[in-house]
Length: 277
Figure 1: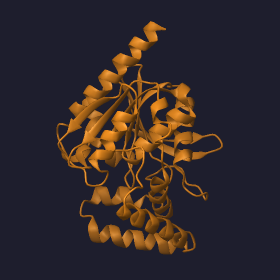
Figure 2: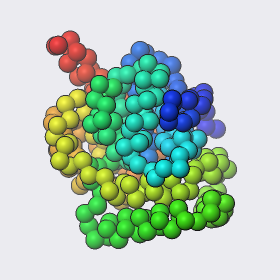
Figure 3: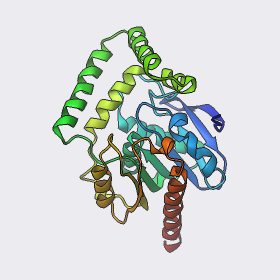
């Protein structure tokens, strides 16, 4: 049985209402940013318990995902980063160590770039600084951009009916299906297109906070070589490896331990920087 920490809606002034799960712990805050097509609960349920008490864990749903902010505006990763910044300011918990998984890793990078005062460290998992290079990726993300255009012209009830039909056909677990049904179908498609447009390669070397990269060596969603390139592009980034696929956070029982080591290392380096200044 899956046990989740308490969750609650949080109104972010001028942005909308998001949903956040929190785990009380030490004063040091860790912001957990989930990946594409999942919710904070689906992404992070394996780590809430093992990390409880060591840090204050804050896990919001991204806009359009789960119970995250609903908006008529086109989905953007930048808006997600600004949502995360508004949440930290609302809770009064910044600066935080920001953990980003897959798409959440792109949001974490943008959060540092757009709101550096709120980020004391980064842990980037199963993610990259750019996703659009190969011919196959150009076709895939180009298809998502086209689908996003069609979806925006499709009635809401039709979009959701199609999404529910796909969930019923492919998802057996009732809890997982319930979490997926909460998504905004249009936002999910636009989010996929936005990932294809993301490119941080020019400014990654400027990241100046302690950073760890967790590279998934069997990842077929975000190629491992891209994850290793990300680690090489960020000055003094620590590299942690897991012999697992893209879903390692849920599939690999050892993942919470790896994430905990990466967090502890980033936290220690951040504390040393603070003492040095």
